[in-house]
Structure formats: C-alpha cells, structure tokens
Length: 426
Ligand code: EPU
Image 1 (cartoon, rainbow, N blue to C red):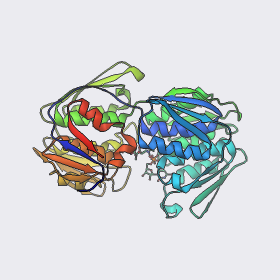
Image 2: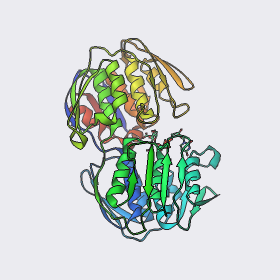
Image 3: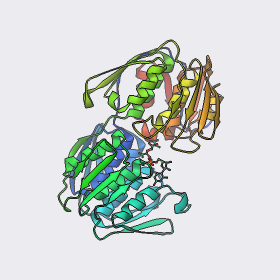
Image 4: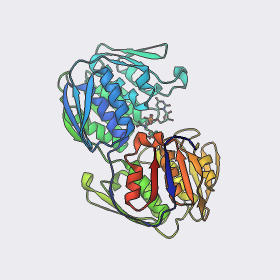
C-alpha cells in the first residue's frame, strides 16, 4: 500500500442522470496564452477546474499576466502591460501548451526567450513546423543551451502551407499573424474546434481572420495596440464528453451531457452509432446537449485516428477500452503519434485481449474484464482505465492520478453522480 493518490473503481450498474461538460483544456490554455496580445482585463467563463490551468497561470504570472479564479468556472486575467518575454524552464517543462506563448510574444514584442522541455536537441523536438512558418514571417531563431531565442523587427504576412495540420503550429502562426504587417494565408491549417474557439476569441479582441473552421486561414494583420481584452466562454470539451459516452457504453444506462456538442464530434458519433450506441443531440452551440443510451453489448468496429474532422488520437484509449468488451474484433490504427499504445499493457492487466504492434492494435472483445491495480501512463489513458474499471469485476485501483487531474474536471465526482461506484483516495 502506498500513500500515492488512487482512484478506486468497482463495476457499476447502468449509469443514469445528467452532467454538464466543462470547457476544453486544449482551448482554455491557448486562450490564456493569447491574453499576452493586449493589455487589460479578460474574463474567461466555462473554465475547467484542472491542474493545467494552474500551471499555465503560473507561467503567465512569470511573464507578466496575473490571474485568479473569481468564482468556480470563471477566470479573470489581467495583462498589466509589464511583460517580460521569457518563459523559464521550470514552468515550461511542466506543460506542452507553454509553446503557445511563442506566437503572441513574438508577434507583439518581437523577441522571446523560451526554454524547451527535456534535454535533447531540436531534431527530435517536434516544433519544426512552428519555427519554419514563423521564419517565413521574418522571425530569426537561435538555439542555445536548451533555450530558443526568437527575434523579429515586425513580423510580415506570408503564404504558408503546413506539411501536416499541426494544432500547435496553427495556433502559434495565427497568434503571431494578428499583428504582422500584411496578410498571412495558412493552408492545411488544423481545424479542431479548439482552434475555432481561439480564432473567435482573437476576432472578439479585434483581429481580422477569415476561414475559421476551414483548412485555409487568412489573417489580415492589424496595427499593434488595436486588439483589446474581452470576455469569452471556453468551448465545451469534446474529449471529456467522449469519456462519459464511453462510460455509459460499457456500463449501460441513459445519460444526458449538457453542453456537449455533436457538431464537434461527428465522426466519433458515427463510429459510436456503428457500435450500437444511441446518441441524440438537442439544441445548438453552447446550449446543446447529447443524450446517450447504451445497447446490451457493443459491436466491434475498426477505427483510425486522423486530424480533425477525423477521429482524434485523444479518443483512442477510450475506443480501445470500449472494443475490449465489445462483441467481435476491432482494429485500431494510430496515425498521429508513433507508439501511443502505452496503456495497452494496463488494459491487459484487466483481462483485455489486445495485440499492439507499431501503429496498430487488434482488440478482441472479451465478455468480462477483471479488476486489478493499474497505473495511468498519461491523461487520456488514465481516463480510459477508469472507464475500463467501471466494466471490470471486482476492484480496480488506479495510481498516476495526477495525469487525469491535468485535464479532467472532477471525473470521479461526475461519474459518481451518475451512479458509478468510484472514489478517490488522496
Ligand atoms: N509535429 C511535428 N512537428 C511540429 C508539430 C507537430 O512533427 O512542428 C507532430 C507531433 O510530434 C505529433 C503530430 O505532429 O506527432 C501532432 O502534433 P500537433 O502539433 O497537432 O499536436 P500538439 O499541438 O502538440 C495537441 C493537443 C494534444 C493532441 C494533439 C493532436 C494540446 C495542448 N495538445 O497537441 O492533446 O493529442 O493536438 O490532436 O492542445 C492531450 O490533451 O492529452 C493531448 C496530448
């Protein structure tokens, strides 16, 4: 027995009830970074209560933007105009989204000193697309002792085609382009809903962006000083929503997810339909909701991850978990991250029949998983192991809870409110 926090999960009967889906981690962190673009007081609502928001707040505080949670779900950020464009190692290494301060700082101040996490060199560090694009806009980079020093007099517009629709690169290019001289046209841009949320936030601040939601973004630079601080509601988290859909899928039951957006999850919902889940949506935009009803047993399907609007890599551990108890065999192909199958061994400990090799996993559904001690290797895999525990006989005790805390707002409380047998032991 260790003192490490754990989540204890026992097999749950059908889940019933309603929950509200919090704002998206992968949007709020980028919106927070974008407050570097203009002085003033910002209010973000629908902010999830997750550890990564606190880490990003610490990073911004070191740079010169203070923030406080004024009430649950509402974050006020104040950019006092006293910015030091230096992102120190101790903070940067804690969170990948820290790379998102690069675009705003470079675009507004023309210089940034950004530590990069880890000790290896540029070659193995996948921000090459960010840097190549910003170079095309006039930035100059020097890499010394694990720190990228970026400078630019004033960035200028450019025509950029990404080799791959990278989420982070798209965000950094757009936030750099809003103050660039002239027009930037970005082709093969990523078009995840969180990028749409960031673009809408920037437009609310006064930026000129066309093509939001498409793979060609056109940004007409405005003069420095033309953007202003605003109030904005963070888009609902499609990955957290999918987590609760997966929980109902393996436990049975009928649940309503308030705030969840079918229009942001279309491909996934099609696959879930093929597996036998009945999901109906109501309302539009932020007032929308999803109702889910689970079949007696899921059917297996094949799934491949792709950039949006394809099925997100972040859904994959949930899908593999669902296939673990489905009727038949499913093949899951990962197209974004090499070797993102680390959680498979943990699912095998629960009795799942999975063969993973390179980019592929073959999942043979079993009639019953069996509870065991497991460790979350990362945030999405952690959530998937919790879902698997709900379908497993006996008790599953999961450590590595800090990973889940990074991006899930009260996963345990929300599942418990739906009738799951789950508790957190700190
Ligand atoms: N890549 C490069 N070079 C680059 C940029 C990316 O080779 O310059 C590669 C990456 O190594 C990776 C792939 O391209 O293999 C995708 O990277 P992308 O830039 O699209 O992802 P990201 O911005 O680093 C975000 C999310 C991830 C999510 C991916 C893909 C945040 C903070 N992270 O990462 O979310 O998996 O997009 O959708 O927004 C998570 O939330 O748990 C998470 C990992």
